[in-house]
Image 1 (cartoon, rainbow, N blue to C red):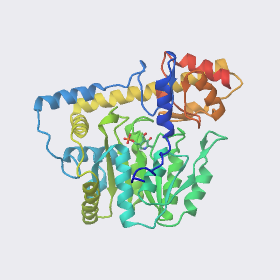
Image 2 (image 1 turned 180 degrees about the vertical axis):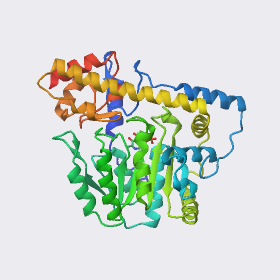
Image 3 (image 1 turned 45 degrees about the vertical axis):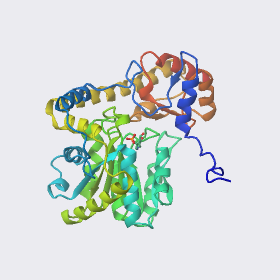
Image 4 (image 1 turned 120 degrees about the horizontal axis):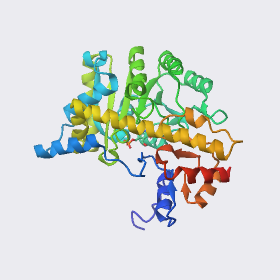
Length: 397
Ligand code: PLP
């Protein structure tokens, strides 16, 4: 037998599998609500105007494509840090925060996971039940044991807050807790600001290591509102990791632009952490790609482009909310005995719709694709497809 002949087929990615089935479907009325991508009202992934303008500006400069530093483009790291922590943050002034450009939010999580495994090898990792499906695999591949903490309550379609706090209180000190900063994927159920206060207290009093995953800043209530939890963790003191992504907020999915930020207790400690993080980068992919980082840095640092970006981001956010409202109103008209009001309370691109696996199967017979868990991407709804989605949902209820 050869080296490769005994290798099994890896399990299919459940969400990419939906897209494959969708692509193979010849029904012209097919609709894919299984995706994790924002579509505009024409069903297209937008190329933001702020990105086009930044690219035009960069084209004029015709700069050579040299290697970036291991930690990424300096202007990018600075701009990201100011966005994530706030420009006036004490952790920036005191040089206690380090930010490293990463290959999207996924790459940032992987950097953080590899880094933590080196220096806290025996910690356990806790992710929400349920969570983004790659969280578990990422931390397991870094060598951690990954557990769940209570999060979602199917009965209320909201957060099982008492369960979550009880989980946090029962974790061994030093455990790494992955928290969705906003727009929880897959459920759409977020903590209230008051509940965040209790979560932060529990994390700090139990000496847990918070790892905030912020993949949707600006998709919930606004850039500042969605990022508020980062500042609150900073105020509470202690170590903090934050991964962030511009895949969704800049509609730059394929450019792989994200970052990992780590808050240390002093500038001197931060310098040591940065040197070690650079080692993780160096031994994985040496240094990050240039283009996406330059685009984002240009937009963030150019006042008129920044303003344009914030307006375009607001448009995406508002359209998603509109789709939530319309979905609820239209379902109320078509299926008055079913209560979907919770969809309006959910935040971000996704909704745990409450549809069962069986009902999702029936949707698929009508060429409407969703995840078996009932997760739908609200950002894939638009003025042209929503009526058919509502009709079919009403039929399968
Ligand atoms: N974290 C969460 C919660 C996500 O939903 C996603 C993307 O779907 C990511 C991280 C990864 O982001 P990126 O596509 O930038 O790697």
